[in-house]
Length: 447
Image (cartoon, rainbow, N blue to C red; front, top):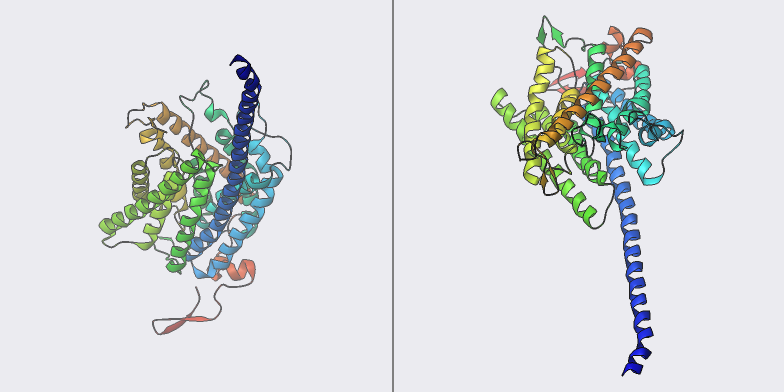
């Protein structure tokens, strides 16, 4: 009996080693497959975010006058072209480079590769294009080119490193009561772009005829159907914007990314209804342009917290964001007398702050509450306030310096004659809609 056992013992040991080796091989194979799927997920998400440029083009042109539609298209084309190159040359390094202080990062020029660089580049272009619509109809194309370069090469990347590269906003041994959370960029992308848009709108000044004898005069967009189509495209692209920010796919990451996409959709739908109901009560009729902005506000509201919200929390965040944006647009236009042509500062700046701080109100970390209202204490709320404030100050301060310098040197605004004629002909030598249109039996030139 003993002899038989001693005979088979080496075989048992060999079998055990084989099983262990096989298990490790399987684990390695699964890990490799998940890595490949993660890269594919980031590429597909980046492609969706790229498509958002088409959405911005349609929203901005549809909500403004037809004589400036080509100019809007040219600015959005510029943003993706400039953003792709400047972010590759220096922006990525300033965002994901080395640091000794958590504030400024750098590791040389031409860094980043593959899916990661591609995905991150699309975010930089988004931050730049937010400014475009706010100053539509009266801004020099040449000076906008310069600001787009600065936004994608400096303003956005440096701020992004504070959170996404383990910067000072994650230093709980410093001033932060908890690690700041901005999953996909309510503050880093949208608030930075939104506050820059507000500064630009202030420095450029209002469109001719917007404020007459202290009264706000409506300047309706030329095609609300284009704007609606643009919002649908942005809604679609946001699934990649937020879902891709999981930066991985497979197992728990696949479940998490799927939940992010679902919560994003719930927030967008709730934001649209929030704005629709608000305008129905306030204006007496449901207002299309404000409802479209409500959808976008719902999306911005959940961008920071899409990985840290329950389904109910995400929907509520979006609903409130859709309400906030209506009041914010009215306040900025009628009280501050700032002409933001499409409400970009409200949608991205003001609601970007809301989307950041709401995590500290009812956010979760897995099954753990981290919000003030759901029993998680005030630490996360404090961190979110600090982060939101820091990004606002950074965006306003840097944008003001750059744009004020441009205003004093090259000038920001076109002449009265150019503005009245339209930027399409004056700046680009072409128009979006040649010929005449018939409006209720009367033919007139395109405006």
